[in-house]
Amino acid sequence: MIDCQLITRKMSLILEDVAAMTRLSQLSREQYLENSINEDLAERYLERAIGRMIDINFHLIIESGQVPPKDYHESFVRLSRLGVMSADLAKEMAMAAGLRNRIVHEYDDIDPERVYEALPVAVRRIPLYLDQVQRFLENVPPSSQ
Image (cartoon, rainbow, N blue to C red; front, top):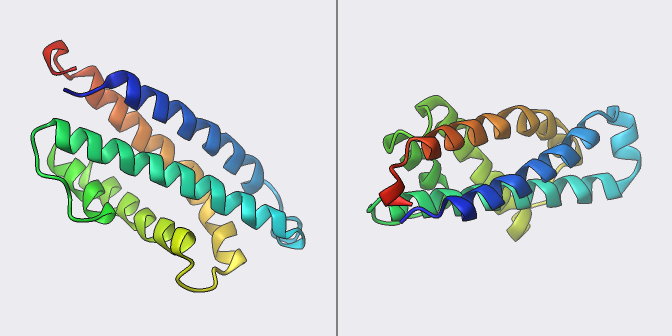
């Protein structure tokens, strides 16, 4: 059964992170780059928001009777197949899984300028993801919740 309360709680936490990312994204490039704490904060907000979206993805997929996705990237793509979101948005959001992995696993040095450039994109795209998940939840029959 889809746990709408769980998803709603995670969505609320994601919105808090988006608000914090919005404040960071409003800094000029120079202001952002002059203080390394800004990058640390941005990375952490991105990591948390993306991780929570992945949690939502897995929950929706598994509770819809599907096998778990093989990876985080696929979890976004599979949501489009379930009708949760558009294929275009799913592709864009799937790229976020790669960013999350780079942040979490420190695969390579993360360029502070690239993180800065990712912030406004995240601030625009994450709410679209949340809106589409919310619309999907509104159409879930009560017996599935």
